[in-house]
Length: 259
Ligand SMILES: NC(=O)C1=CN([C@@H]2O[C@H](COP(=O)(O)OP(=O)(O)OC[C@H]3O[C@@H](n4cnc5c(N)ncnc54)[C@H](O)[C@@H]3O)[C@@H](O)[C@H]2O)C=CC1
Ligand SMILES: O=C(O)[C@@H]1CCC=N1
Image 1 (cartoon, helix red, strand yellow):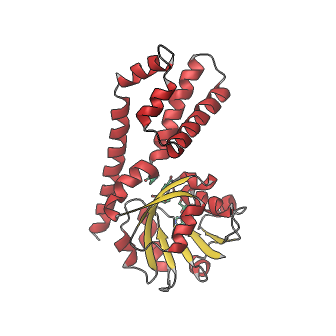
Image 2 (tube, protein in one colour):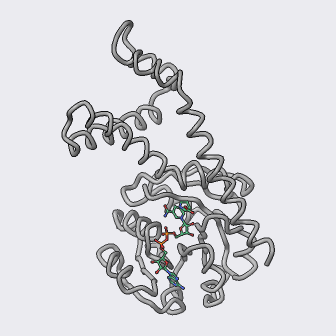
Image 3 (tube, helix red, strand yellow):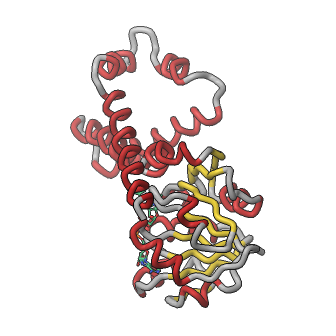
């Protein structure tokens, strides 16, 4: 059983804890200064504490899931040994910045909120990635190994990506509501449609263009909607959103270069 301590049990740390708790492979310690955050993950964790130093002592893997601007202070409270793994997931926080402040083996990852349901899309730096962390990421979804230079774009695509997907689901829902569907039913239909389409892209050998073709019957309904999308800048707006998030990740990283 791998002992995992998660420091910072907010949106991301909480999702990871709940995802790992779905398996029986982990002893989970939740660490946070906020009692409400600890109460929110009490069902998933085996232990909860606001004592960071004590909470990480016996951990095989320590996950640093606090905001980037408090990471340095938290690292100062840790005294980890070389046989421990430190997983950092803060946007923009360079792996080297963390590695300079701990004796533990450090890997940088960019997960997303899908961890909660076992559907994470995560990227991990090849540097510092161990089989123990690979197994953890496997247990909460899918991951790819990348060079750290690609972490900013990964942060945009799969870290921020759920927000972009929520936005698109909401637009689809709005279309349904405008056509007269009940809002709850429209949300179910829109969200389940995105889920099914995502599964198809992941499992089917056909390209996205071929899959679009498979939905478009000749002179049918879909082609009418696709013509509207192809004539719009919808795809360019999504590409721009990814670029803006990527740029912000770079800016966050620059703040650590100055130190
Ligand atoms: N929210 C998301 O979808 C994703 C977030 N991330 C990264 O995860 C990190 C956390 O983000 P969120 O979960 O969204 O933030 P959050 O604000 O929801 O959670 C942060 C938690 O850290 C706790 N905390 C603050 N100082 C602490 C300390 N000294 N010791 C222990 N706990 C402390 C807070 O009480 C809070 O519960 C960030 O670095 C972010 O870049 C990465 C991928 C996705
Ligand atoms: O918005 C953020 O900065 C964090 C990192 C990726 C998702 N949420």
